[in-house]
Image 1: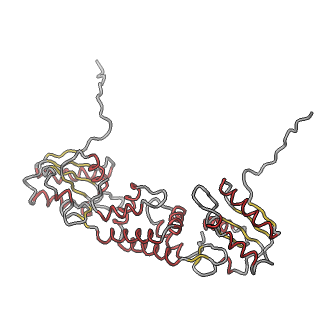
Image 2: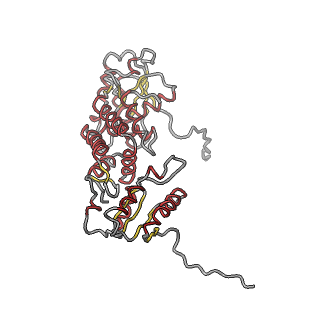
Image 3: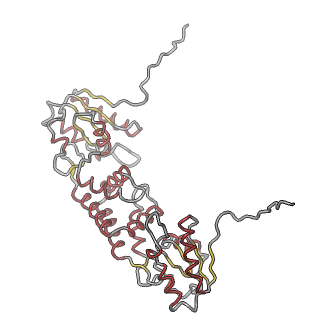
Length: 189
Length: 189
């Protein structure tokens, strides 16, 4: 497609690099911004840059945070004996929205995926071990693995279970599939 | 939803102001940018700002342009006797992609829509009249109304046809609906 302006073309190309946004949608978004006040585009651009440059990761759980320690890790109301291990920030948000879990988190920042070249060393697994060896060693009783039930997720969970064995902690996973009461017909001889 | 960081929340709020993007998608896009290099976010923010602040409108046809006159209006290869009247830049792009139209354009910048408070004075209708009265008056032979066949589009086309009557030009609209050869059975008495 030949764009009427190089500036439009550049903007469309950059916007269409985002996941799930093609050239057509990108053009629609760009033309939308052109119709709105200049302030709106400025706010958008500034908030994206501020987010990308200033956001920090919690030093304890590696969740996104404005400070060195995230609000969950800094809170004294959370159950310090439970650590829920998740893939990324979205999982923390989803679990927090249920308001049912009162423990702490540990954000891995991904899952082991040989296809995408993500190995255990790319994830925050060593820092989880460090947490369990460090100041939290006496408090933590249980690790909950809340990792997606895909092949990569299962690989990650298996790897973690092996790594966590020496700590003698209770290790559980979140429920998956249908809750089911099955009566099997055992074949009689 | 409670975000782990005010910076993330601001960015999500700004991104979700774009049409067709909700909070969930916005969060996905923001987290995607966080995983990518800082350069990518910078390029995105810069290209959006450059586009919003520097893009111009062609003084003749009001299409988006990098210069005072767009490439189509500035070209001597285009048929100066034809003007195709369209709603916005996307229509120009769509028609240009067919490579079938060799005339000029006039971009209205919208259509008459009383519901959304858009009247004839909000559109580039006066400037079209000025084009027909000005230097182009002797060249133009035909005006093609390529406006969407909605109620608002028809209103706009009707308004334009009335306004264009004094110029004694050929006024045509693009084809709509199915091309159809119908043989009606006329009732015999």
